Image (cartoon, rainbow, N blue to C red):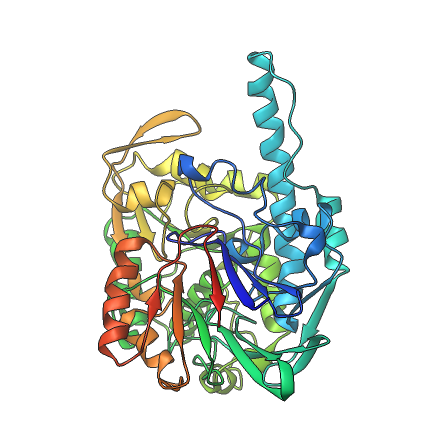
Length: 470
């Protein structure tokens, strides 16, 4: 029969991560089950449809909790998947809140969609999945520690190594037993983090693999280094809040980016440098995620552990206010003084950030700080690319706010950092690298760099393409 890999998502795009491994004996292992996030019409049906039968999947191995990697899990279970969902313990805990939040958004969006369909005399649609579906899915999660081999099927074991991307994120190695006790090692980088970032350990080396599925988000690109991040952030805060006396709005992912920003501001406050303005974390999910961060010190780097000897709560300071209730969020928009607002979602597609943008983007005193990747077609990408006007909630808005970009905050490694990560691989043993989770122009640049570094063969799969692993 032969072993095969099929690329069921994040092929020549950066969202919807999902890759299907079929072993010699027919065992089906799904790596990630992510939601597509974006507005490309070619992907209109991606989240609804499967390129495999969910009931035939034996086990799901999850690299981390970001919605573009985990967001379709409740639908997978709803549509017949009965197996274990294997991941790190921190990923399991984060999924418990993130999938419920995603389900709530699915239900809420569905109400709006059905109102529009009713006006066109079209029948109502069901949400992609419900809160109940998300709750059901959580019963199938199995948490596993980093660095140990864990058996997931009769002939397959998995090992997670810390990817340094977000709390609990991992690179995945499958050790697949073949005939005569021969083993094939199939690896999945997950999202490769960056060295010397706050909070988390550096990405750890994976075992040498025969085949490797590797992310490529920032192929051909170099990030700004870490050493100046705090000072650069402080300059932006002072410019926005002291010089312009306006609001600094930071769209940020609820998990990872928000905690990193809060931790950096906590250190600035401890050092007496942070301007005395209110700082709002306006995201219920980010608030819950911050509580989970406090529960998993096994993921922290030595710098944070040392800092906690002086400040036991690195995610809280006097001027910091967490706003859960909708009324509190609305009150921020009514606030006229200088302040800092950290709100989700990072790509500005949904959530409370859209309300803050709607109310402030036409104010020249406002500063919008973009600190993360925004997929093609998202509101964040449109703003990031310098649009003069945007549509928010169906209303055209002039972009009069100052737009500032700090790519150094990215949780994805740049090209050199990804190449450094690949150096743990045996170039003679590794037969092929498959590039995923990247736009094609970035992937082509990264492919060239990989081949120039002495690796044998690199493929850039298209969606639903299948390869034999001979």
